Length: 522
Image 1 (tube, rainbow, N blue to C red):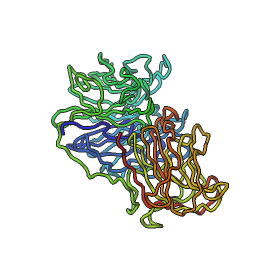
Image 2: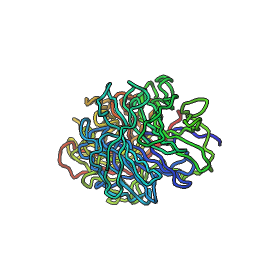
Image 3: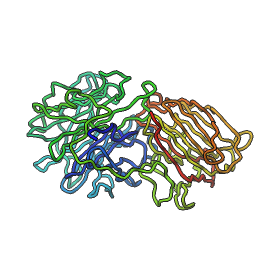
Image 4: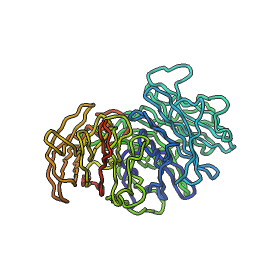
């Protein structure tokens, strides 16, 4: 085939950053409050990607205790220099709290990666590194302009030299650019490149919503002044309307191929059922070429498309990932995540071989904590999920089951627990912190099968006492509450397994034999 389908990373994979090492391409994305942090991917054709691991996969690297929803690890940048991979990112402590920039290194992109090198006096977010050909290394990020903000969210991109020996910033800070689109706001996501004698500064402007965009400037001197591209923004979808199939495109990084093709990775979202973006911000691929020293993205069209021509690279597919996780390996599949850094040994793949055991924790999914939860990203507009659980609640408050999650205040939980008339299965909708039981049935079986079928924004929940003997628990649940357009924040929806004692002490556990996620025709 001469075409490929976007997005190249479907689901909640925002803020992509890419680099090439020979004929191999590597890419990372943001993870916010989810753990492990910063997935890293490998490709040989820019279209087919496999996950190698996570950059931040040890508690010593990533302490997310107390991190609010949609804070934590913001946009990461991945670079390679002199035999070493560098990943630099911003840890956003809280809504109004400190922004702490750090980087880690590894000889092998699959890890292990170093513990963080925290940078002192490095304000701002979306940090990036640039390795100049004179041996100097530069740090860039955004900050409030020293002269003051001229309009709300007015930011500038600044630069400072990084000493790799001391692993700290040195010398003066240089103001580089405050963007091409005055009054649009939120200048961020900077990346520096040196191409044909020019320093190019590629940034994001317009915030993370509908007005998101990518803009560019250049200079013969790294400290500026920077000349603004007259065709800015070089990429945006804001003019296509909120009902276009891909929206809020921006936050880009670029890479070339050995044969001289140029490609851009960027984030975007696919709304459905209205302007609802349940899958969050995803990673897209789009070609560009240079004309008179400036990039022209997708010449003749200027937008990101769902189907585009392939790069002129040999196709390299990876083995297909299994749709069903049987929990038979010693380690979890890389697609699974925790909410915040996992504390206490609350999960096991060995206590009951062939099962995932989740111990009940006092922490609940309805709290901004580290609950007993393992989840994976929603990656399709329509999908089905099935699992089977063995669980016997011993007292009121003990619950376990399957959850569709946007954050601790917006979620759908199909759970087994005690009701007024004994053991029950129920569907709970939590919207803006207020819970409602949408359906409830008596349950006498120790083993229960769960099935979810989501067709667009309409979600049906089924249960069974035997395999493939389904009873409808509730039909047509409103999936829009799983969108950040309803819930707020920056992350996409997750689907996962949980177990909670809701504040009480418990030695109980729930066992899951398998978990299956598959797309449905859209």
